Image (cartoon, rainbow, N blue to C red):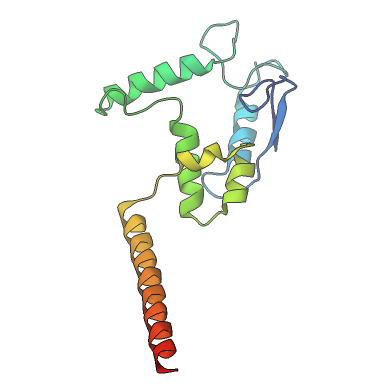
Length: 157
């Protein structure tokens, strides 16, 4: 399935971008969900925005509207105010992609990032940070051990 976005932060000349979304055919399949939506949403004009305000004019949702509404819902559900913001979607997507083993190049491609800014969005769990720390310490220990052995070997000559 392809979705056309008329404008995006990663589209500075506002030419629009085309998002390709694959079918997974599981319970969360976005393609099947869209097919079900189109089957019941017969009143929508062909080129109307996919997500609209409740008004009959069907204005496209703005980023500000979405962020404000989600903050209201997050607060109403008991989350502290300010826990959720507009960067939560890219942060969550980049973090999830890293957790499931998607490479950094692929994360950058999926998120339409042209710079390395996406790296700031990836959050590592405490468990992952501990594993990285152990790997680092093991590397340092092995390197120090190799240096010591090399010095001892040189002393024998």
